[in-house]
Image 1 (tube, helix red, strand yellow):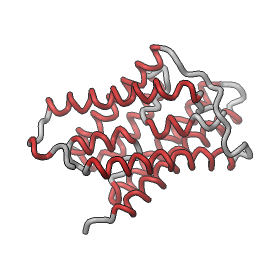
Image 2: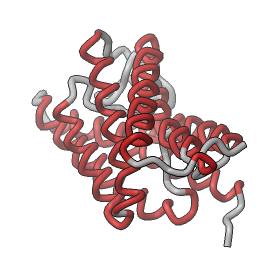
Image 3: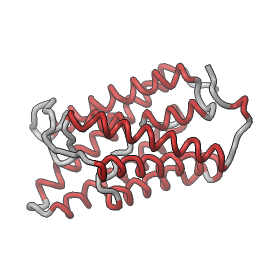
Amino acid sequence: MKISLSRRLASEFLGTALLVASVVGSGIMGERLAGGNVAVALLANTIATAAALAALILTFRPISGAHLNPVVSMAEAFFGGIPRGEACYYILAQVSGGILGAACANLMFALPMVSPSRHMRTGISQWFSEFVATFGLILIIQGCSRLEPRWLPVAVACYIAAAYWFTASTSFANPAVTIARSLSDTFAGIRPADVLPFVAAQVCGGFSAILLFEWLSPRPSNARFQP
C-alpha cells in the first residue's frame, strides 16, 4: 500500500529533526565531558551520530525511504525513485526538521533555542572534504539500495562514522544538517557565513556520484526524471 505524501513528509521531518538533535546534542555533551580533549569530544559525537543514523534509517525507511538529506532526495528523483515535485517537498521537510532538531538540542542543554554559530569552517580543504564526504555517501546509498538493501542502514552509519575522521570538515555531507548546525553555537556548529560553500560542495559531490553511478550501473532511460 502506497503511503500518503503527508505521512512521508512527516517521516522526513521527524527523522531529520532527531538526526540533528543527536549530532548537536552529542557534540555539546561530548565537549562538556571531555575536559578540553577535542579528540574525545569528536569520538563521542561520532559514535552517537552513527548510532542514531542507523536507528533512524531502520525506523523511517519503510515510510519515506529515510532520505533525511536533500542530496539523497535529489539522487532519488534523478534515478526515478520519487517524482521531482515530491523531492522538493522532501527537501523542505528535511530543512525545517533539521532546524527544529537544532533548537531542541540547544534547549535540552539549557542554551538559547537559536544561537548563530561562531565556529569557523572555511577554506578549500574544508570544501573539498564536503565534496568527498557527500560523493562517497551517495555512492554507498545507491550501491547498497540496488545490491545489498538490508545492509544500507549499517553501511551509511559506518561510512559517516569513518568520514567524521578522514575528512577535514568532519563530514557534514547534508545540506539540511549544515543549515541547522549554523543555528547552534556549540561544538557541532558552523558559521552561517560558511554554510553556502559547504552546501555547494555537497551538491557538487552528490551529483558527481550520481553521474558516476549512472555510468557504473545504468538504469533504463525511462526510469529517470519523473515529473
